[in-house]
Image 1 (cartoon, rainbow, N blue to C red):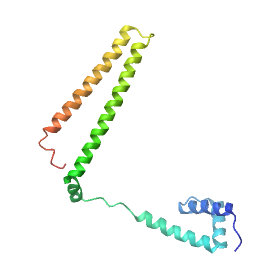
Image 2: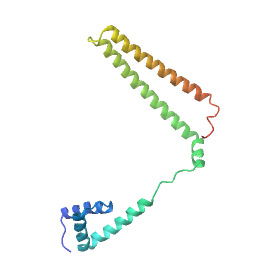
Image 3: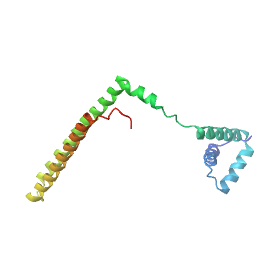
Image 4: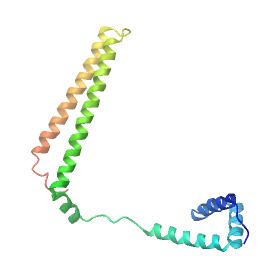
Length: 154
């Protein structure tokens, strides 16, 4: 067997990946076949990679059963962990949104190119949107707390 250069090995790897993905054109296919005929190592590597590809195509993730999920969610730690995560996320989001809103209002007020009417309109629209957002969140929270069917799986 002749000594291979790094370029030849890289070329084989490229052609090998194309062959495994069925993307070889006629020229590449002929070159790849010559490489396989000339080197037993290349042929063995190709056969091994075909086996790996076939095995991985047949593999799939097992989905947990409903019983597993029910057992998972009855654990105090799991519920507590998720709740704390949402609280931390919510606090961070409120801080960022408040800061962004404050900076936006500050820039609208400081902008000398906007008329007072336009500034008032922008601020009232923002205030209305914020009020509606808080109202919807409060309503959803209120309904969630009093939902008689929340323990029933849908």
